[in-house]
Image (cartoon, rainbow over all chains, first blue to last red; front, side):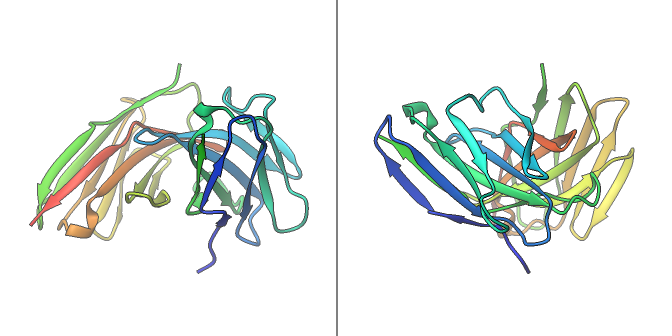
Length: 115
Length: 108
């Protein structure tokens, strides 16, 4: 079964540094998402991406965050200047766009630790 | 604001039936989904309800009442591997708004 893959599985970064989290969504999917989950808390929506542009973003997704689909397969999340509170599990998800009843498929996540 | 409330924890024994409730208050609503998450793992889709009523998928069933802004996930014939966190999630435009999550512990 096709799956969403994320790299790296764990990223440790000094506060203030830039970090790029990478995702390869399922190949025929059209909608892409980033979510984050702070340890022990619920999953929170960050951003959705469709047709090579952001379709929606949350309050969390401020100017320090950006997303890009540099080629036909990768979908990246960049945090320009990381803060301690950015430490969380970041999940990429994709959906085929066949309707609201279609599930979002999640990757295994990248655990981001800011020191 | 937008909120989805779930019980924080539920315990049960193998073979039992357990119901996890979810009440929601959101500005938009296309449907209610349920996701399972094992410790350290990714959320995995379980079910989706767009209309009122019960949807059954094997041992798991999900119910929705839009007029009550309420839904539940019913897990039957519990197995040890069902120990995980369960999240309800409202589909709002194209994004998921997740609930607070319910940790299910299944004992032998």
